Length: 386
Image 1 (cartoon, helix red, strand yellow):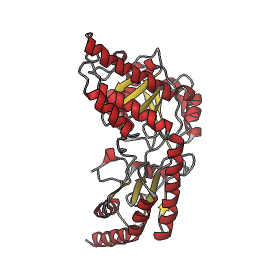
Image 2 (cartoon, rainbow, N blue to C red):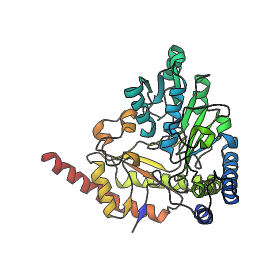
Image 3 (cartoon, helix red, strand yellow):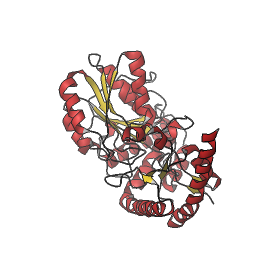
């Protein structure tokens, strides 16, 4: 039995993306070359850019392809900060992904930035009153506000349009990596200054993402070289991955409503079953408005590492939070920001359900959960005595 319940970390590449990738990889040419082969590849890239822009409600020129969501986030955070030397404050939420928090921390340590963290409510959304106060008192010092579109551990969707209204003329960036292709996302309608999207969360290939940046705006680049992508992100374009990214996005959005319903039903079924088979479990994730497939649960008297290893021996893949923080022995900063103690945060798992999961798989997981939790608790007691 092998059951994959870590779709928030990366999703299985879908057939549409595989087909597009196979065709594009067989074409020879650098999209920056002026000969016929180069122009042919460039056309593929621009066709993909145009289609992707239609899918997200943007202009083609607003899409800047990058190698990852982390790179796009770094480009946004550092780019906006460097673009405004008279403003040194960066506003983020207390439960942002480390792809936002770590670049901000670097700017604090090396460039004299000041970070302001917006707290989150028990419902898993940022405190808008706190944000209003910060903007009212320090608006002329703020270089950028960056708030994720949805949280990767709780699933909660953030009030981005309201944040934009509060921000006024201050640039607003949103990390929409978890949202894009799963819930409604429209760049123009949100009116954000910039947004990050990624391929591998929606069934596309690894190693390609995009920063969507409003027309007419420049950012100080992180990379310097050939001047590709509006001279904001230099580097030879990964044309096959870009074409496959768009194919995956087109497929995901065409099936988004059906997928949402299917995944949400499996999520609710799992939560109901989990509460029955592990009565003292505490569900941290929210159900509305939220991503359809994320379940974050605390199992008192356990440690997440033990739970993950025991599940893995049963052929079940899950996580304790962001995969980008894997191997770091510390409780989830997201759950601590939500108000959990460090011990409770360290006893929590993230189950993320996707389109490839079935009710039969959920039943198999529920069948082994009582034993897994009991063994994890026994291990916790023993380790506590040592």
